[in-house]
Image 1 (tube, rainbow, N blue to C red):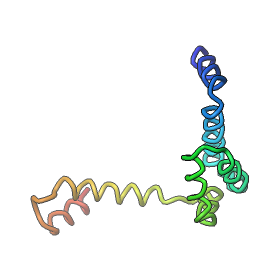
Image 2 (image 1 turned 60 degrees about the vertical axis):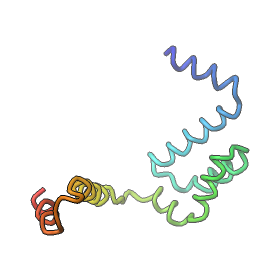
Image 3 (image 1 turned 90 degrees about the vertical axis):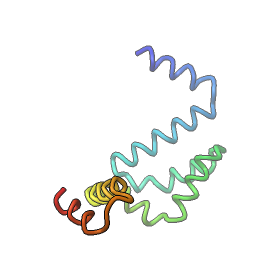
Image 4 (image 1 turned 90 degrees about the horizontal axis):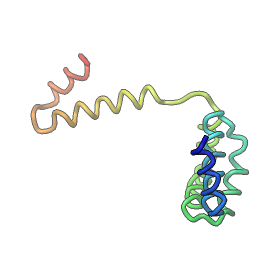
Length: 111
């Protein structure tokens, strides 16, 4: 409870930080709840916030709007594929300079 009181006190003293916290929280909710239909409003709000980092992020989202909106509205994701790719890259890094492709292939298939 004390942390929440301190957080509110800090945000009350710094309007830019309060705006940034609101935008980040709003985006996190949109991401978690898959509410991509709110993306246009969020981008507009972020661009007009006057916060350079968040405005730049919003411009990047707007440049590939269709893909971002699809990612925020559908329940499909590539998490399992990314996990497998990450595992293979880790194995490759561990073996760098030690052995060739045949051993890497064997480790990937057996892991």
